[in-house]
Image 1: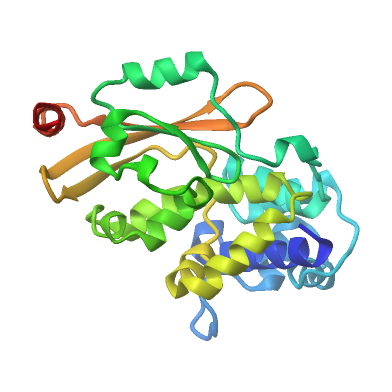
Image 2: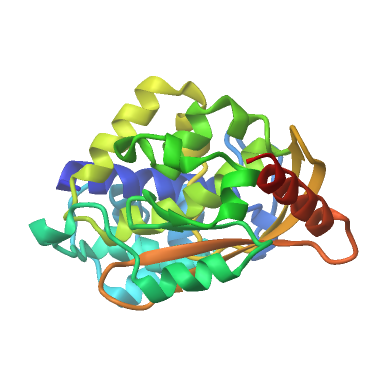
Length: 283
């Protein structure tokens, strides 16, 4: 990410977070003549103990000096959670992680990781890299989502597939909720790997190709490992409920495993077993 893109991302993030905080939530009067939702710039500056001019410059994406202590104050003023605070630090302090050329290509999961995922027989599981490129999955994932083996390797980006493939757009009952979880993860990578220009190219491509992407991306949600329940309406199995758990795989490849566990006291696992068994019998 070049400095211009980094500062634009910082500006968008601060504006978005400021707009979501009600004055009364931070002990300020609501007033009756507010032209914009949320806090005013001068109110954030007051809460953070900085000048309005300095905060305005920061929010406008000007290249100014910032310190960790001031960012702490801004984080408290904007009520940022831990992941959002880390993202703010990455952007404001320009903590670039340079990616060696040999690590810019698709990562290959270790045999042990593949075995672990395959052992999760009735928990659809997908392994992705720092670009959200799908590098591994188990049979359950192929049945619930799609057969990734039939997708050319260069097109197996999870974010892009969610927007481009009709079967995935119609799968989740609340598609936007489904997408926001993955975009929140993607944003943490975006902030962490400021030295990787791939992200800017990808975001530009997605914005041009899918109008709904820009609106959801602008929501500026940040989460390293969101946990949520998702309801699917599967074409073959009907209603299915899964809890999504996202696990970071330790090591230098920065892989992530997204595991969909059937919700207890539902017939989701039974439906998945039945669907997979029918497929095996018909082969």
